[in-house]
Image (tube, rainbow, N blue to C red):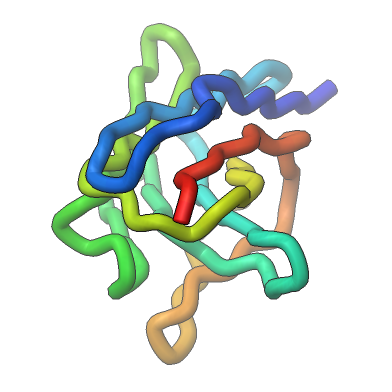
Length: 125
C-alpha cells in the first residue's frame, strides 16, 4: 500500500528556513516524480516544486525560485523541500504527492497520483 508522510512543519519567522520531509512507503521514489504543493486557508492548492527522479529534472514555481530546493534521498526513500527566506503568509499546509511524471502547464505544477496528509507551516505575517 502506498503511503506518503510529510514531516518537518512548524512555526517559523519570516526570513527563516525550514526543511520538510516526505517519507514514502509502498513504492520506490527513484521510479516516480514527487511534487510539493501548498494550500493556505481559503485559497487554491498550488504547486511549489517537482522532481522527476528518473532523470533528475526539477521545476520550481516562480514564487519560490532561488529560495526552495527539492531533493531526493533514494537510500531513505524520502524527498525533501528545503525552504529559505520564507515569506510571511500565515498558515499553510504543505503536501507531497507522487505520480509517474511532473506536469507543468503555463508555469503551474500539477500532479495526480498519491498524496500525503500534509504538514502545517506557519509563517506569521
